[in-house]
Length: 83
Image (cartoon, rainbow, N blue to C red; front, side, top):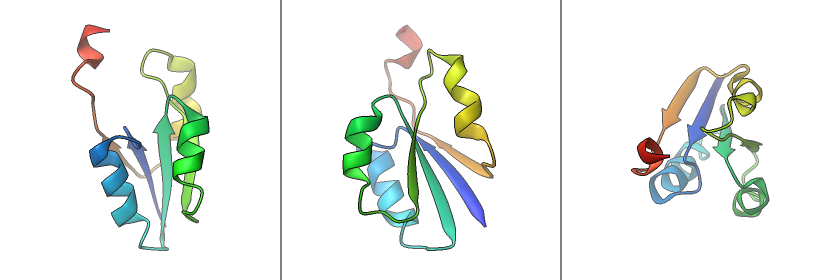
């Protein structure tokens, strides 16, 4: 089974990507986000989507999100380089 991590999951591109990927029940999706409360509301009706905290500025959040992942979609906001 594919297990895909989508970083930037609640943005325009990330959300569309998850909507498309979630139509395949053989794909497990992890939505890596900074604000889990909002993301859990957005993805509440997606059976194969799990929301986990991921913050580029907090390396302690990386391991939990990357466990068992087979592919990563990294949708980078343009401001991340100036953080």
